[in-house]
Image (cartoon, rainbow, N blue to C red; front, side, top):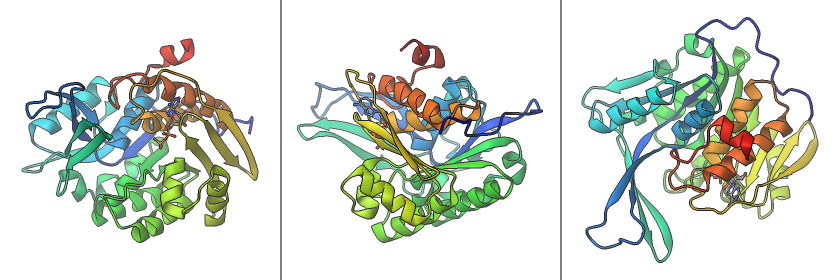
Length: 319
Ligand code: ADP
């Protein structure tokens, strides 16, 4: 587990990429805590797991591109501004005339926070395999997708699985986070498609809750056994404030999480994925990359929102 996970970069062209991610981005409206009346104020932010992830990777210095569809509405414009600001290439972001960009609201009540989505029939649900051309895959070292990229529509599922298959064929390292959301699709369908994607990928990135939902397991060890039984090659299993489990080449090891004062851990898994993949791209071993990702994710949990508190590389190094 101490060897570089990816072979070193060689003879890169100026338009070479480390990571291409595919999925749906959304605009977030987060209710101001302590002001829960009918006239609450909302702070605007951004979300969408794969978009969060690719921004986190970019903040660590990775060369990134995002593949999605957005509407030609104000929300789509905000997202395009965000990606440009964050140095994420947008050549494969398609603006759909008359299309709508997804949004969601975070409300805070006595039971904690709740998410309400306005995303059905969003532009991203129209993703097709043509949105991720072979020429883009030829420029990248890694491809990142998630269970949400599969769940939003059958067209997006086809686009995502096609990209994963074609990436594998040309030697691109494929990473996949199941991010299971029971509200997005029925569990038998999630189990079947996530299982297929997990077998296809090089690095499977579940959280303990994902495996509880998918496989009914109650411990990380049972979860890793299930992954192995599915034919998954390498699993990095996230277990919140406790530890990260690595199962690679028949060997299992753990890396402890970092203790921090948590404000909002809802985007920590996305930050973890982006930081991990950015480090694998520059030649870290799996264990080194996991340690770095755990530090970045812990720091990201100390602020509110999924994007704003993602630390840049210098802050992770100084932690
Ligand atoms: P997911 O969001 O995918 O379910 P987790 O909640 O396990 O994943 O969080 C992802 C990673 O973020 C964890 O593996 C850990 O490194 C870090 N993390 C999450 N919550 C905390 C926390 N409370 N304290 C420190 N680190 C955390």
